[in-house]
Length: 129
Image 1 (cartoon, rainbow, N blue to C red):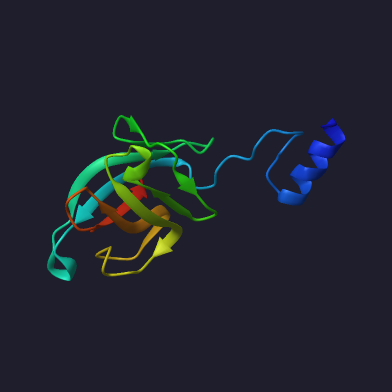
Image 2 (image 1 turned 135 degrees about the horizontal axis):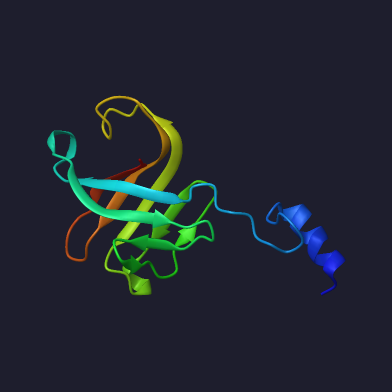
């Protein structure tokens, strides 16, 4: 494919900065995470950090997530791809959802759920500190 065709494709898709270089993922960062089971009366407990890299890699603790699905403001992965858990989260820049946070928060953050095999999903949140 000619360089001019690649550049035109990048402009149409909005996925390139210079020539064919992919744009950095907006939600990249290292998130301090927590999980909560038990619904509204549950307690938040620390969980492994979640790193989302500018080139769209996802690392939970020290393990790279296999075949993550990254959308404009979403992330998910499954055990079917060889991961230890299933997860689905939505990224945002602020939240006042009292179910997830005791006070309004802002910055790079996510809310969603994570599920280990053999158990039900638990609430999952993260914030770049």
